[in-house]
Length: 82
Length: 344
Image (cartoon, rainbow over all chains, first blue to last red):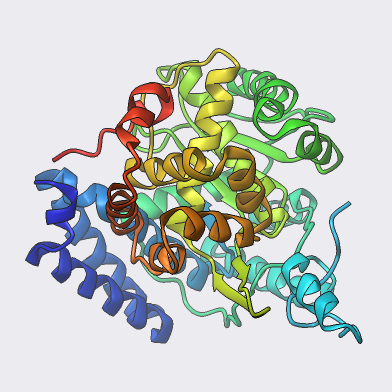
């Protein structure tokens, strides 16, 4: 699929909504919530990486950014991975 | 020398123009040492909490404190230490590796190398050699003498560790002169060298204010777009790939292809020097002026409102098409761009 078609697709828009929701939940969460969010998010992106690498390439940085936010909430340290 | 000012806390000049320039130049630095110390203190508590105490951890915390050389302040979120959550296996492995590193592993370059108990001591030695080459050859080939000299005056602490689950991986901690590289013997030297260059570029950019994308409009307003990681990663990969290739390395994979292609297009469109300066300082005023001048009013703003690099790339290609600019020629002629196969 061409990139300009991909970013208008249903799967793209649904993923974008999920990311925004995770971002909001991370901001407002306590430690227990973060565990749930991290598990949910990792599972979602693991499946995407395996089954749809083109879509994953679009969201790779946003996935990474969520990881970084989770680490920051846990450790108080802002890190950039990769 | 980098200015030691805090964004939003600059003394106001009587001259509005100076205020605007001051805001543009404002590089968040370590002026608010207390804030930074509190943040570091919180991290220490986190390390202790996460590791559940013990003498090894005390040593790790001491080591952590020694390793940290804060050279600037970043936006620090208020944080209250809590109980330890269970992380994903990958994140857990990363964090355990970081803890192990903090416990005594590490090589300080370029000034000196410390004795360490690394599980990969030969890699430590190799890492020092790589890093010395990066700061003396690779990076100067892209940024010139300005930031190469700056880098020598603000040396990094670099640590190496075993790869995580077979993946090479680099980590840069914002606000500190420290990067960690994870790799093993099976990985080729070009890839490791490039990973080092990539993280070092992050350091140069963040330490000079590059994390806060901002610009001044024609009517004098200063707009802060804030931290845009897709832009930061794309430019970091593009410039570090160039640096590695200039030094004779041939990394076989370009990371973040959409974002890197976007950065490359921007360089070809408005000039590499202009983009490099913006990437390092965060001041995109000139890039904005040039983009809007060539592609049409408001295009820069549209590009930088994108959700991610893919959206930005599609928007840029559309604008280039409309302006009759053949970016396929850039793809053919630029070896870094040629490596950004986006698919489709």
